[in-house]
Image (cartoon, rainbow, N blue to C red; front, top):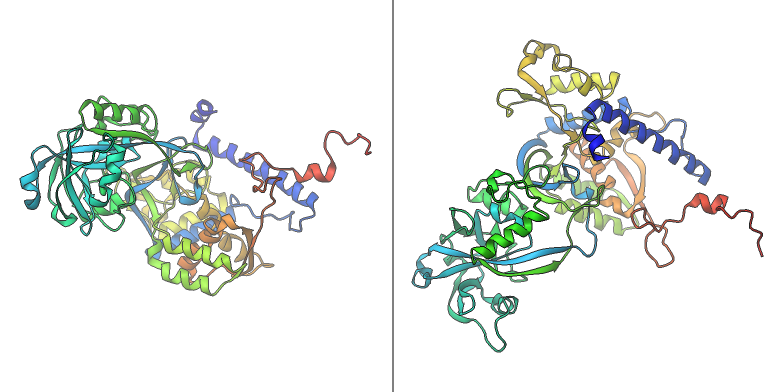
Length: 522
């Protein structure tokens, strides 16, 4: 329960998590043996074993020394229900998610040269499916190569919109039948750059800036509401234009005081979202609000929606070794062949891998922060080797049970008061993705690279991929020679049997029979 969990210390929570994991492993082991699965059940490998954790620190350390691990502030998938950052592989996209989609007009303050003669009463029209990010708006981005028009109608006044989306916008704002926008003038997106506008909810004036190819005429208005603290493209565009990463949302997914006293404390995915829409309506800035059915990321554990939010995290820069990873994919045998296409697509599209998590269970990121500034970091070969030795002997619980003076190597003990150990742990995919180091490389009966990795097709974005990335980054080669993707058992309707769907037939019930074992067969 949430209240009980909040009262647990990190050590007691880890003890409970470890006990639960071991109990579950034991149940799985008994079931697998009953099914006739072959395995070394007397000697299983567990990611919470001290020798595995020490090997994982080695992998992390090697990637750090190679320059692939870094700390930065950027938008990440954030789960308010779990209060932690999540990787793409920890997300689900259930059908039927409905967001509130809004069209908004921002009043132009100072127009660009070509726009100046039409600037009186002119508004920049934007569209977003996340109204709660409007407080973080710091720019509107356009595609310099697209055509944009100034249009007008008594119902809306003058608006700037992508030329190809004029008819779409007319339908969205429900202009009277047989009426249309009057087109006043048309120009390229590059001619709009430099125009400034007034934020409808704050005394903030921002600019129209150049975006990228992500700005299309497939939907919306062709002018993109840009909140660098809440979106990947927004973040990259903001970097190019020197914009800050404003993110007025806390760990619980509630507005902070930066959003204003009117909104502080409101959950952005509920009350806060509606409050922003109401506030825009009150300022006569809202052009249209409607329900929008689309795929939206959910936390795979809590089954609740996530948000995109700028926070300080640790990342693995996949870009630094992407070419080597793709070369390694070519050298592996994929069964069936389509598996190669799947893993290639995931590796090609992979951005920076957020490897830090805000929770107590798991393997800690072995870093120390300056107590005075919180910014200076102590992480080097000497500290890594000392932590690795401690974990090999005591397990990663040592990080929470020992003080800094014990966790620091001899050379730094005298300044232990200066340093504070971090509280972030590593992504579980980094855990499992280190199994080539913690298992295959360490056991006499196994070898690295392994002859075969076997799992389901969902692991091309999970274990297959994380194992590939860590191995290539640390050792320069794939951790496996062959990858075999197995199929899934389907239910009577042809859907994959899944615990989350509740359509699983327990194999033990098939083997041993159900409650009606005594019923005589006819």
